[in-house]
Image 1 (cartoon, helix red, strand yellow):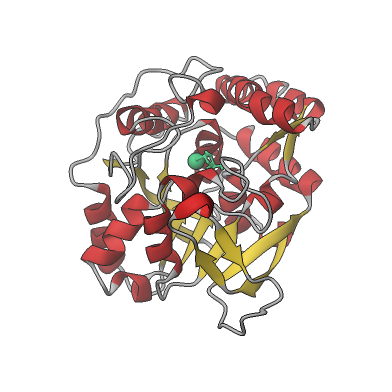
Image 2 (tube, rainbow, N blue to C red):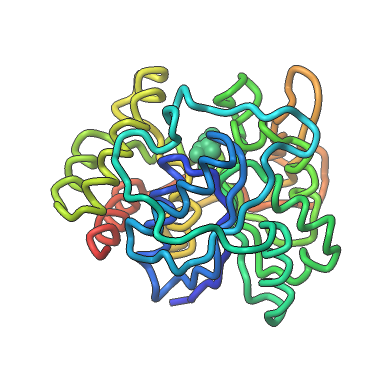
Length: 311
Ligand code: RIB
Ligand code: CA
């Protein structure tokens, strides 16, 4: 079993929170160096505080949270309170953070943590808009080659969820996404095509709630609230659980299947934020990411439930 040393860049957001809890519950597979917060689902002052509240809930407030960018590189910030609620973590009452934010901008923390370790040892996980990572890649041109890889939730082979063309994380900052997908690091992309196959159905939600611990009860409350928008919009039996796919892949790669594809980012116009995934390699370009498309959803939720019970 491989052990991954990671930085989690996120915009909590209920699904980011579950991804963070899954990482904390998997010490044999995941060493979490730091969390970095970015503006996305809700403004930065909320996402960074939410990250610290989730760490406090799990009794891990020693993990540093570095504050990053409060807006995309070029576009104005667009948030998603319509999904996540005004706080970004509606659905549960989390404790106040036991620790303050760590010193240093998120981009500088990424650079320092990666460049101070041997090449190929740190994986950057991203579950929000890619603004912090893009800034770090620009500030330190050697960063991409130094990373073991980038595992991100974002994009889509087929339809978007903010516009017909674009998924939220890429839509919010398409210029950052273009920088990330154009870098030399190996990229694994979890887009909507695979995340919409892990639905928080009632039985799955009740199984998490039945664990009965404070963490599990909070997780169930977060998931219950967060699932409603997409469940009602798509008429599915549950909402898609996007961000934990990133961490579950590192814990058990056998859960997912995909293939290496060229991925291009549309930065402007009516399709801004589109990940153009050349699944059949029609342009004959070299692959730029491993794009995940299938998942064993029952085993994914079995893993998630078992790990949440450990916290
Ligand atoms: O489109 C889903 C993604 O956007 C998830 O990461 C969710 O948390 C939001 O950031
Ligand atoms: Ca997110």
